[in-house]
Amino acid sequence: MQDSIALRQQIIDTCLWMREQELVYGTWGNISVRLDDGNILITPSKVEYSLMKPEDLVVLAPDGRKVSGDRLATSERELHRGIMNKRQDISAIIHTHSVYAMAAAARNVGVPVISEEMCQLLGGPIPLSHKFVPSHAHVELGQVVTDSVNNVNAVLIRNHGVACFGRSLEEAKVCCQVVEKSCHIYLQLLASGGMQTIAEPWVSAGRDYFLNGYGKT
Ligand SMILES: [Zn+2]
Image 1 (cartoon, rainbow, N blue to C red):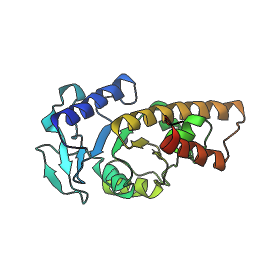
Image 2 (image 1 turned 180 degrees about the horizontal axis):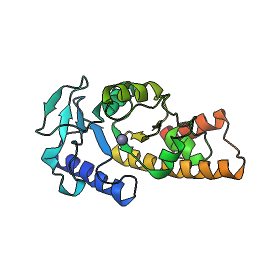
Image 3 (image 1 turned 90 degrees about the vertical axis):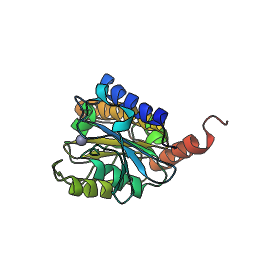
Image 4 (image 1 turned 180 degrees about the vertical axis):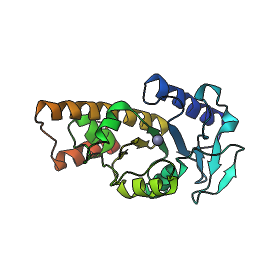
């Protein structure tokens, strides 16, 4: 994506959308987008979404160096940077503290594939980062979360929240919704005493259909 006022405004609008959808309270969520030159456009630390202006966003190099912007990038920048560097196929990351994802992230395992939506949008079971790291240890948090990222388009952050990815901001938004709904259903299934998960060949076939066949057949 090309850096522009329109793209920056789209990110701000997505911050407001996160709050409207009750995926975050306050400014406890953050967003990044990969630019065409490889740098990362990211939301600033501690700026109220309704007051955020396009010039408040920060550009970071893949190695974490600040390229432009007067503000400090979000304190969770290492998480965004680690995931962007590991997953070259994605261009947008949305990190939220949504309720059901947080509940699922307080368990000890990730979320299995329980719906067709998960096959297509996420591409597999949602992984969970392997240990709790407090937010103030943001370098370690970024490393631990990135270690758990695989080819699935989301990662649960243990006792913290979730990060959802996509090839575009719009796709990452849909992933946020699919993850929240999937975690909600999964927790209800656990409480009801059982579930039928989707076997791997169907998961890969569903993902392949979304990437290569959806809208073409
Ligand atoms: Zn967070």
